[in-house]
Image (cartoon, rainbow, N blue to C red; front, top):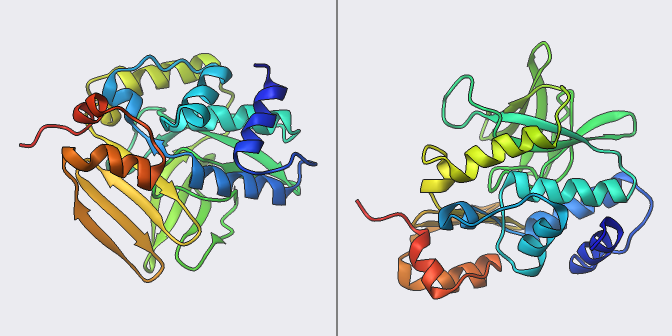
Length: 264
């Protein structure tokens, strides 16, 4: 499958028609992607081979419904929006949620210029991540209950933040440097093969919809809505069905039994 065929099939899966590379089309692609194609650590938890070539990404994410994380989801998005004429730039970032002040380059995003302003396009951060392009420079975008901004906290260092109450939570930091496929392979290898990488010892799944966010972290399943949220504990016996029903992620019974970490 070449990139043109892949893009046509991808858009059809999202019930979208190709068009000129407008801001509205890009926002709609991102909104539908994070609602349809789950962020998961299925592959790292199972020890799967996870090649990053576009056809393999399309097969895992769109055809086989296995989900994926940033190097997979944003890798696929990069190919699609390139084919549509958006001219994205590949950028790597450092996830800040662990409290480590200088973590590794283990997050992939795209930068796309819209109306003369660079925007972050990111469909691979999971539940806290943006559901629409976010401009660099501090402008706040989003809905009443999911708001984002990208600020330059020190010269040349941009930070994606989401609003939590009256505060802003920093999700990841990036610099506008030149990166390539080999840089992605390094970060991707660590993220899905290292025993110290969170995706290899924690199971996560998430989809972001207009009216709710569904998030599974090991055995804790959350449904977050504008008015609040619900939480319950999940056990192995219901995991496969929950993944299929809530996230449209397909695994076998044998695979589901291997996804959750052992109880302490």
